[in-house]
Image 1 (cartoon, rainbow, N blue to C red):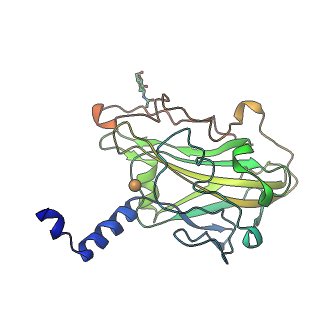
Image 2: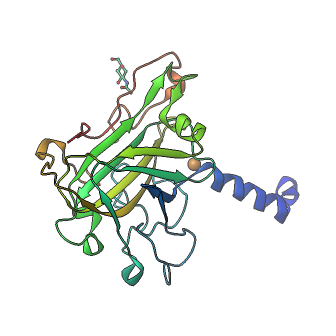
Image 3: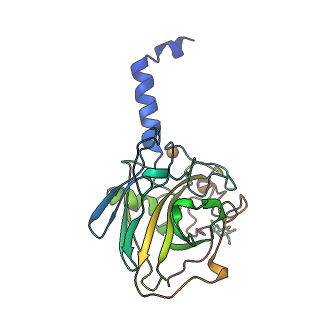
Length: 247
Ligand SMILES: *[C@@H]1O[C@H](CO)[C@@H](O)[C@H](O)[C@H]1NC(C)=O
Ligand SMILES: [Cu+2]
């Protein structure tokens, strides 16, 4: 009782702010020098305009088979405010996260062909392919550099190239952090944005590269349910999901 009383509203607010700061999400995208603002989480979608789909909080999704895994909660189209960024295949996409997401775990980037207008697409029905991934970059579980640590070192940014040979069309782009700093409790942080890819490419990933969300991950995947503190000297980390498709 006494210690609870010590938590004045100010302290509580600071605590909540630090918890928010410890989670994360993609706030904007910069593509060929043009910055596209993301959805403003913690706000109503009414009146918002973005290439990003709705996502409501910085909080993690902790179930690898959650229905919210495709594009976070709730992943909805913004309706009249939903936009798509037109980008040539081969473009680099810089995703900007909030100041301080987590530092331990992999970064993964996926795309999915919407087979038509992405604004009408249900992300859970799409077939996703991975275009980028990075896990344990160097060293061991305990003191090595994880992709998420590099992301923070790079100003909370991650830069990915859209495969140059990818066939034109409307695609969903999905960035994901899988934070594994909590023993045996994965934390997924996905966000989606809509792209219209242009160019003269003809390549499409074959079936072995395609996965569903949920479906791509299982709790039993070695890289999903993991206690890094039980094996501080280990240097192997298996990034979950399909192989990267490079076009
Ligand atoms: C690391 O290697 C061990 C021994 O082969 C294996 O049991 C474990 O699943 C691997 N861990 C990851 C995260 O890939
Ligand atoms: Cu967190």
